[in-house]
Image: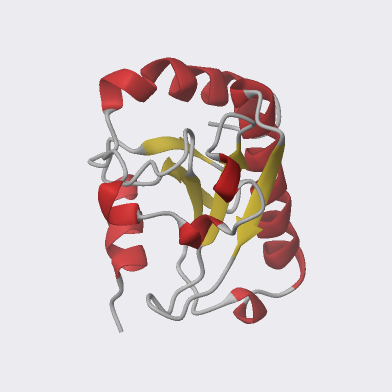
Length: 148
């Protein structure tokens, strides 16, 4: 089965996805196409697997470590108060991790809500020019930990 995750990884490999932040040891870090919060990112495994439990040993450890590294970089670069992490695979049945910085200036009602409570259809679309400074900061921070 070919999913959106498969297509995104293929696009990242081909250098055709402007949302790509960097190649990490386990896959690709990229910005979400809808920026419902500043810096919303994803980690996609390469090669694509159906779910976390399909990864074994060092591959599983590398994916989880990369997810945390991406969260560390987002926390530092955005000044977020915390990072939310999520893996579902219900809509797109391929492993991918959502890495969501949570900001102090989010609407009061959202402070304790999960990220899916946002109206994603009203969220700003990925804007390469607007996110260029953050992308550069993330690349620099991640380069300290992973080969790019």
